[in-house]
Image 1: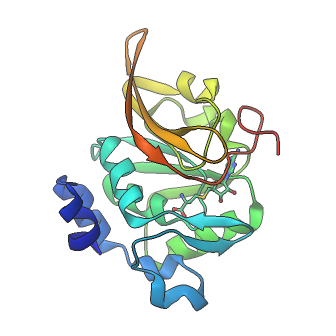
Image 2: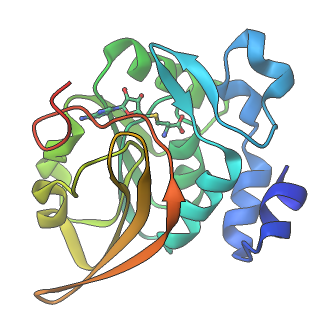
Length: 204
Ligand code: SAH
């Protein structure tokens, strides 16, 4: 998976590649989908949600440029797979999930995979998690009409935020970087995610 789908498509960051080699993806997909766990596509995880395509996980992770001392906030824990990759790279990961049953699944999967340093919290991630702010990196793994302002407010100096921004059907991957009072904005092509539902996301 890592060599053919990720390294071959130009992801060079050795820390990201090695994190992805070390996390067993089959633990994070439903029992009946195990045979497809390392395929080049997203998979359903129940409750209408999905685990992202491996290449998209790698690309978003490398755009976050995570350093070992970083504190990272993820919105949309889902299966917990992306959080596990972040957990291999950062000091501390907080991952918020709005559906309690899905949050429980993420926690169970992370424990099975033996990942430490990831905390899953049930709630509306569009509000961020002010208790532990600021964050060096923020990742939204659901489609949002615009980047929720609380998440920008909780971004540390030098911090990077990556999100799929656009319509419900198609989004563009955006990276915001905070430099003092300025935010730089870069675009990385089209993606498709399930919707971010909440106060600063879609209503339903
Ligand atoms: N990162 C996940 C995939 C995320 S799918 C993985 O690696 O498997 C998107 C997830 O975002 C879904 O589980 C959905 O329930 C969740 N979500 C949607 N809106 C949310 C919100 N406002 N706050 C937190 N989670 C949200």
